[in-house]
Length: 195
Image 1 (cartoon, helix red, strand yellow):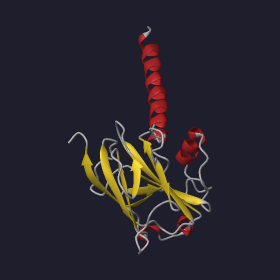
Image 2 (cartoon, rainbow, N blue to C red):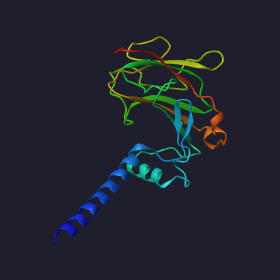
Image 3 (spheres, helix red, strand yellow):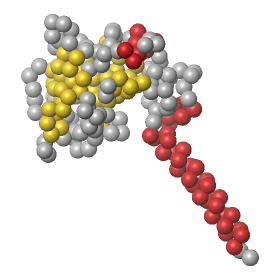
Image 4 (cartoon, rainbow, N blue to C red):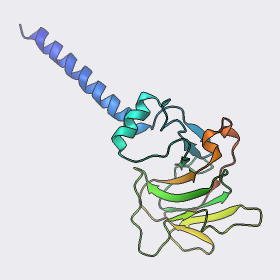
């Protein structure tokens, strides 16, 4: 007598619960479709445009951050090094090369959730195009690790995964149709504290 209503209720609970869980997981897993990948770096050029897919729009609405419009700039994120290994806060890295053309750029480190790392006072947690020392050809080398290094250095000492965020401000790259041909800085592993 109660078997059919119980089965219907169980089916509806699984359907609605599974649907809500999968939608929540999808919104947290990606910023949307249409990502471009250049080496270790990835970006979503359509994230702030009318052409953004529904997942990107929902992610943007739920995130609560002010993002750059396509004409203002482009944000690249790296979660792995050149060998494909996941970035770790217990390791040291070197970012070398040059960035695509931009009026201004910044490089910072975040935790896996995209939040700023808690760093000691008076240590550099980011660099930008005005403060970065460069070679004669315009290229640079930036060390990231717990131990201070001469030249360009960003503090990195954290448990768990990290991401490197490169923000290009006022760049023709954002409007370019041939972004796959851009040269991005290389991320090389130097060593890990627990190895």
